Length: 452
Image (cartoon, rainbow, N blue to C red; front, side, top):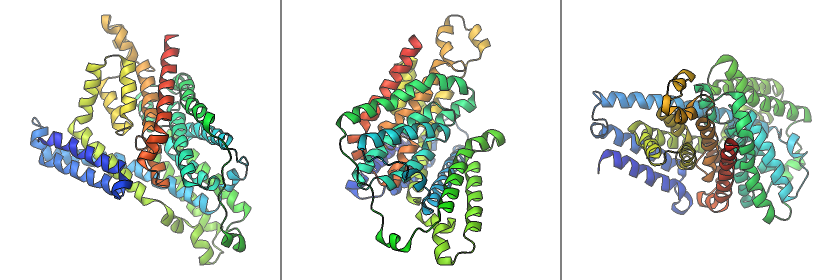
């Protein structure tokens, strides 16, 4: 077997181990990291087979690995900063500011409220950060684990749908925005309704069969006796500063042009200094659980390592050319831009949507107005690839929402899986069909509006 095929085989086996985490009783982070290391190792030893025309394969592979690791590190530091802020707010019981105002116990009403909050917050923040915040809220609102998993699955769909119509709501939409393929006003105008349909269809399907009331978590008696660890002022201050730090990230990026993780780390550092000052007069026993040092022990580092492994594994396939080969096959076999985008969206539920969109951006270059004017007979096809062309707009929607069909198909899904330990096949049985229905309905809405 050639090294090229062996890499693909190892990735498939690793992917299956991640999906079968519970039956085989091996943590998905371990499978992801092992898959990544094996794929890159095969790439190094098989470089002469894969890169027949490259004069210095090993040097090039090392450079590619450093390049991909730099991009992945940005995501990991962003994730680590966001999770720490959320855990710090949770330690101060800051989420009571919201949970105390959600008084309904009705399953359907609660689902609609949470999904619409997620949908709009995701557009202002991003789908990953929003999912982390909403999963933390769900732990305060729903006691039963299986029921919480279901709501978490719907939150993933809502977060991805909300992130698709905003230039800062999803990393792939941001890539297209920075690359000049889409503009802010146009993407909001063209994708808001399809994205709304993407979450409305699953909500309507679920509301028909969802009955009864949820059971709220019971507060620990020991905490009742001891009393609240924080005052109402401390809770409100840390909550609003935490949310403010998350909301500030897009503004920081726009003003400074620095990567988003820098804005996240800036917000975390400000909140860190504030809490140190806020609790400086307390004894060490009371202060430690409310400090960043104490909170860091609660951050789920396993999910961070899982991110590292799966993104490194996918980047090895991008380096070896597997993803470009898939993109070429889609172009040659499908031809129609709508079919290509829908296929890319479904494919993004299996592999990371970032390299897929990056591959599409390289496969289909942005067409300038001048080039379109001189295209002659090709103008009808090339018009889809100008700025704010239909191809780029539908790509933003499909790449952003198609990943909801599988739990490891999006950053939001991976975060939910890591935080709540959601089983891959449980999500596939109960959420995937709902996500697919919403995805196809949203895509059909976009295509229908384009025809009109």
